[in-house]
Image (cartoon, rainbow, N blue to C red; front, top):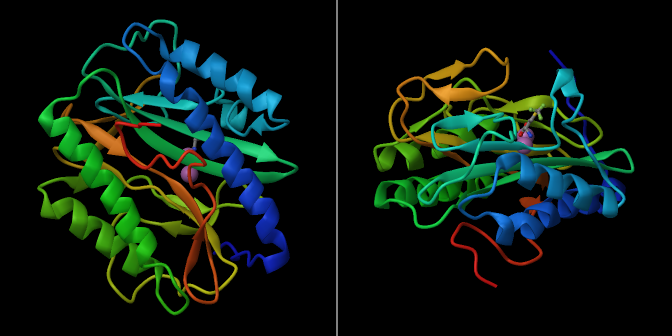
Length: 262
Ligand code: MF3
Ligand code: CO
Ligand code: CO
């Protein structure tokens, strides 16, 4: 088993800076998400913004990943590759997932966006997914377990008839992109790893309108729902404190779930 990294309170300012930088990228791109733009255009804008902030993307080159961010529309669960061929249209829902490196520290966060007006079902899914993530985060405290987080997330998603994806999960983050512990989108209360102050990880539930089954396309990245149902995801990076948790990737603009208003 991979060893858990316990960060010290002295590391928290660097974690806050990396997390905030990633969140700022999502704040920045928000007004550009409109019908008619390509996902590659959005990726190029974020690429330039990240460099301007003195940061760099963790994604390009990661196991050969070709782009700056992941952009996953509609039935794409995760790891959608931005493309000049993918033109957004009214009614689409998309996830944009940004991971930056700032002075060697990783900041990883994602949000959903509406392109034009979403269907009632899409909106229900997106709002449920946000509440699923936040319910998971609110479990996080010393003495609780990773199973507590997963269990509550699956409950909140299932309550509205949705499914969580079991094939992908949250992960330890900080000095590395992906480390222990895994934060599954399901679980059993009291099981898993016991949370202690200084643990840093992401909570990033993927929630589907249909089944949670996944399929990865020939490109080796794009992961879609097997039944072609809609999928949504939100992701925050958090640290366990003496009393609970701190979210490192809160939006400086106060954005939570869409529609985003200034
Ligand atoms: N940001 C994703 C996560 O939440 C990972 C993307 S890996 C990439 O863990 F290579 F596809 F960018
Ligand atoms: Co992540
Ligand atoms: Co991510």
